[in-house]
Length: 414
Image (cartoon, rainbow, N blue to C red; front, side, top):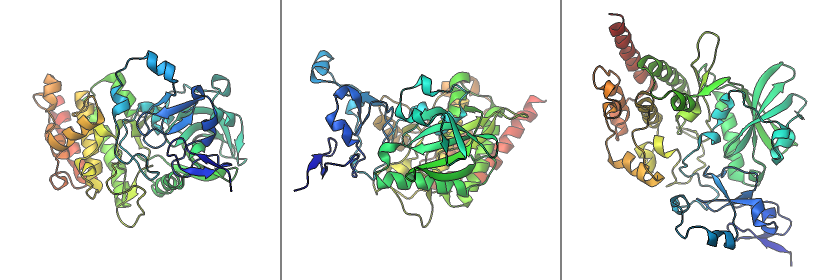
């Protein structure tokens, strides 16, 4: 009889020589190691190596496994975060709604050159630093770690330019669904050619098995960082950013691609010589085609981030380009008011507000917006619960924003 080992996450029996569980991606080598050397996701319960920071399935922050003695020494009241679970998270084809920390987004490629080197980190993925991939890309530094990939800064030798390389997390290689999602991001992003969407240069495999994606390097900051550092943005700045996002979205929507996770973390503001806020939309990793594409999420599973998710995504109803416009409405509200319209102590409370509550007026948060806010009607229309009552295309939205911006500039000059 062939020797077997039980996966510590799903308890399925697997060949003893297995390195990863093919059902949930758990690193099986952790089963024989001490608890201090591994981490666990507080949402789905999956185990990860000690160097991992985020769950590859729901992008929740990972916690160090603790012994029974350590747990007994802590408060007997469990944390709210540990109790928050979403249905179906044990499936290897599940993408749940994450509360996504800024550090998990590819928006980190817009870093202000705060780089890590092999000497700064003893994480296994830092071993790539200083090595050359396919004789073309010299890995220079680690920019960040995401739910599905590690993001590196690299030098493209032949073209003599800086690029960003996303390499799929090693423990996901045995998970067919995760590999398909990563490959889909490569294909989708490569299909889009627009000045306001991050460009893809190349794809490949490291050692014939680890997928990687090569993208343009964006020097600047994410929109999330800009809002965090500056607070509410002026009318003109907000309008200029929204107009550019609309142009990029229209290109994607015309190609039949819906982003499904629009948020400030996924919008980069490139520092160009002539302007500091040239928009680049990133992270099409959970996007899908409107027609004819194989879905990698099961019916009843939600995809997105709670603060920016559209009501129809919570009702398991068909989604289309208007779903992205709802997320853009949340972003526009946040840019002008300084915070999102719906927040709460848990993801569930935020989701219920999207379903049941009307958004507040921006003037309730910033009284100075009470008079002359020509963008309030636009935001109100974007945040309608019924998609039929929203703007129907990104172009329609862009034209109204441009008209409102002209009114603001005209008033300023009179």
